Image 1 (cartoon, one colour):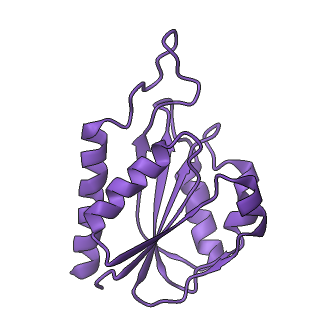
Image 2 (tube, one colour):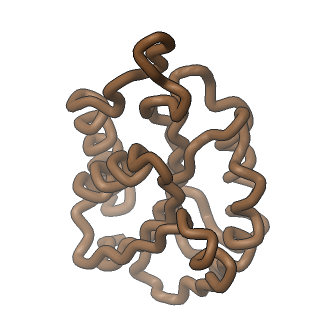
Image 3 (cartoon, helix red, strand yellow):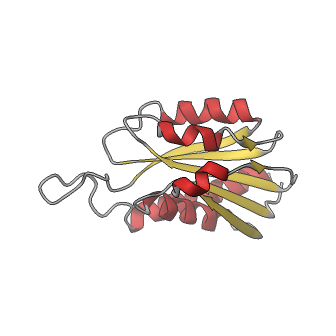
Length: 161
């Protein structure tokens, strides 16, 4: 499957999830990218999406909150209709642990009609990080972004095989 359309769905209040998804997308090299950022509460309240293109891949990227998907995102996420299309799941965590987040995302994908082709967890600077408590400070760094890009390249190779 040649990915002509990539749809990013993300929540990224600190920008780390957006940076990771951008790197994964760069590795996939789709023809067209569209992005839906669920960070704004006003946007989330009215958000609905149906994936209907056969050449479309959905890339869902979420930060980890207490080892799970942030609870307040479920209404927006559950408004998405996958229609049997392919998706990739990405969790971004602050180097403490990603817990059950990928399992939460897998359950969501199944419930909303997606087929998962890949999943990964990446490190991003923890939102509570500060000089006295440096939790993954400066992450994702260049190596992390390169790993995310390589992950995207592996996804593209898998889908094109």
